Amino acid sequence: MKALTPKAAVQGRESFAASLDLLLSRRGILPMDGSAYRRLDRVDTVVVDGAALCTGPPVVVEATAEADGWDDAAVWSAATRLLTDDGGANPQQNGARLRLGPPRTTTEPGGDVRSLLQGRRRVGTVTIAPELDPHAEALLSTATDAGLRLVLTPHTGTREIAGLADEVTPADEPLVETVRRQQPDRHGVLVVSAVDGPALMAADVAVAPVLDGHAPAWGADLVTGSGLADACRIVAATADARAFSRRAAGTALTGNVLGALLAGVGSARYGQRKATTPGKWATFTTMSTGTWAAVRTAGRPVPAPTAHTPWHALDPDDVLRRLTDLPGDEERRPNRAAAAVGRVAALPVVDVPARFARTVSAELADPLTPVLATGAAATAVLGDVTDAILVGSVTVINALVSGLQRLRAETALESLLLEQDSCVRRETDGDSEEVPAGALRLGDVVLVEPGDVVVADARLLEVSDLEVDESGLTGESLSVAKSVPATPGADVADRTCMLFDGTTVVAGRGRAVVVAVGQATQAGRAARAAGRAAPRPASRPGWPS
Image 1 (tube, rainbow, N blue to C red):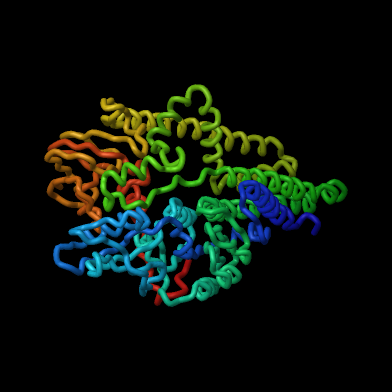
Image 2 (tube, one colour; image 1 turned 90 degrees about the horizontal axis):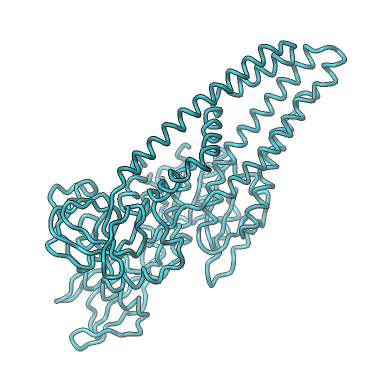
């Protein structure tokens, strides 16, 4: 019975959890309960507090005009200017000062209803909520990409991204009740919340980002810095933890099978003495690979942030000012096409060996590989070394050949994509130059004319009889006439002051500033959301995972 032990699986999980704990602690994640990392492989549901996603400055999310001479767009724009200036400018219209009245609570959590006053007359009503965190959408996308069921609590500021969730809970349901409702049938629940103590205590894994101006939620298992970037790391680590736990269990089973063969078939002296050796090697393997898996998990880059600023609701001057004030180069990173250019350029010298090793590893990550490896080892244990070498050689040679073919196919595909990269005219110091689409960054000013394919989302600054075909994005069969004035509160199809990635200019000319590239564009976000189910009604609890 010495040959049959689960030690390899247990020690492998412990190695992964301990290494991940150490590495993420160095990144600023404070473990109030380090055992939370040992429960990551059991998580299959993520509950996100909508309030934790909204950490930005207040913005207008809805506006209604209530006086003659005012429309919804005018009310929205006036309230936005007041919020931007903190009410200090006190703009005037028709000789009377504009101001926002005191806040009133709404039926939907997280928002305030305020009256827009012109002198003593109320001209409209606006709903105000905090702006989404730059990594709010990335957190929800990370949860769905990890194969987790996503539950979101309602919040006025999360209307734009609520469609990513599998379920949006009722407004009157406490967060702790939502957590407990997800936990029957041994479902592991990870909660992301900044302030809710009971829900954090009830969760299997509780993650609490620190909000500026608020005390940390010390009842959480893991306390992260401000923002949601570290929460994205932890949610993504659940998929790696599950995958490694399965591999560790398979390795432990292999060691037990080989040890049992030695004990049952080997000689009475040699077999009994060496029966524990496969289990020891399996334990060493899982512990070393667990550490390496944790290093890879902790080193994975955080998804790129997405600015949820309502560019279409702002005047051109406000857009240019906000883009100028972006914090650092992280927000102005090039899109994926530029990264592909760099990868292709680096292929001949550096990247080929590493990519070839990854493709071979991918070929070996086949369900039959552990079976063949176990069979070859068992054959060697029984004394038939020749058959073991033949099986192992065929497996390795097949992986090498298949990996080489995959590498060549990927290189050819990247070359084709590089050749198809569009060019765009970018304005530089009063002049224009043609640059690859992948070189565009936030804040770049581009020029468009008939026949151009728009390669980024951009806010128009100047137009001259500009018309754009947006059928690929909105389904509108007719071309859309574009203009400069802001369109607050409008749906994507009605945002006439915006150019969208993937659309085509059919007439006129325009000048616009880039506000989103790559996956942060409307087209990129639509592609990520394609195929995802709509939020399930809260009246159907216990949805099977």
